[in-house]
Image (cartoon, rainbow, N blue to C red):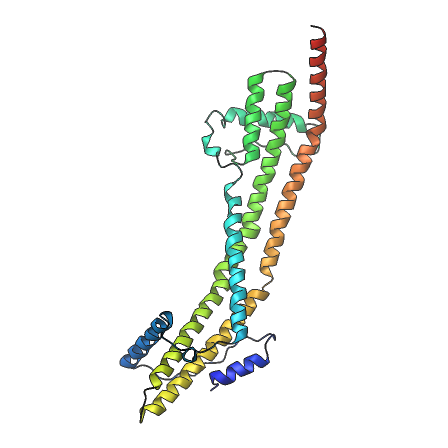
Length: 317
């Protein structure tokens, strides 16, 4: 049986070294007596209350190893980073960049516009190696898709002319950007959000549970020591055995928590998940940039020609 003092001394001497997973069986003392179990439960509760109300001395609280405390702080930081990034990145699941999409009327998102967009896009890609566009099965709610629908509606309402043609071009381009956006959202959901959340709910959560076990074992040890202060006669030997058993439980719980926290901090999966997030974003921005760049010259030429015609008409007046 290893005492708490020898464990902390040994742990201090090997700080910084990787530890193998502890699988040794924990020595148990028979605590089947209902009355004894209840007594220890009340003692632990009393110890908790005394600590919370500041009724304990520093020597009455077992000091945990510095390595354990350092790992606790680092795992808390990792958990905080997971929670914060997950909270923000989940916006990719709801197309956060166009929050007022529900305000669009049925006519603005109706089938006629979708049909027009498909037809215009088919014309734009005719004779190229680009894939032919498909009419979407449902209304897309991203900002680029909303811009596309607004431009398409304007093109229909304005009627034939340069502005209508430019609005058509803009509508088709934004539809491409929106399609790339929804593809990015799907990739991020599958390759980042799901595994990132799984890490939070599995390995990090397991280490948090192990830490709770350490807290419970530490409170039980200190409660047992507090009870032993008043022990006399034959009770002294029984108290000594109970303290040794409580120390052994704390040793085992601390070793397990340390190993689990090390595994969490050394896990390469979060880095791989972040790489997947970056890949999805890079692909989207590249596709969006290519789609917009491909029509800039055309729109600029249309604007220059429209300005020249306007100036000519003014001169003739």
